[in-house]
Amino acid sequence: MAIFNRLLLAIDLSPDSDLLLSRVWKICSEQMERVHVVHVLRDDAVFPGDAVAMLDVDLRRLHDQAFIRLNTALVRNRFSVLPDQIYIKMGEPATEIKRLAHDLEADLVIVGSHNRKGGWMSLPGATTNCVLQGIESDVMAVRV
Image 1 (cartoon, rainbow, N blue to C red):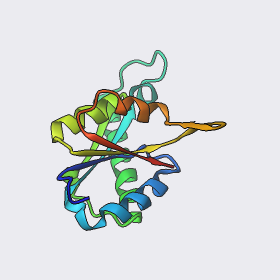
Image 2: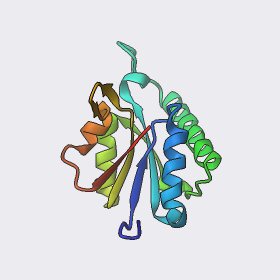
Image 3: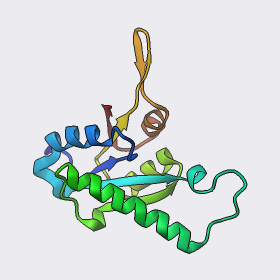
Image 4: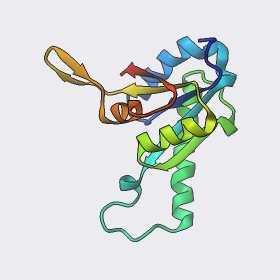
């Protein structure tokens, strides 16, 4: 992994996140200073249906809760990532992951892939597939 200077790890905080984190830690444990981590709060989860825009206080609370959950998962899986290298974004996950990868000039984006199994062929999940489309960085999809 020494050929990558900046890695962006995207975590969805699903039950499979610990599996992804443990696999990535085995690969990147010696290079934690190069790892940046992102979790994206989906717009449709924050503003369900016809809900009126939430107050800034409510948005801040959602952001803080996501940061705590993400940091807890990182610590539980032996990651030592600096707080300024942890990002909570809001929007469509693939779009926000690609935007942050571009802004950070990430060499490698690591995503968990919830594969859809279909007989003889396994396809990556929707978010993973969208991240792969038109991104400037290399992408590592880890099956979870």
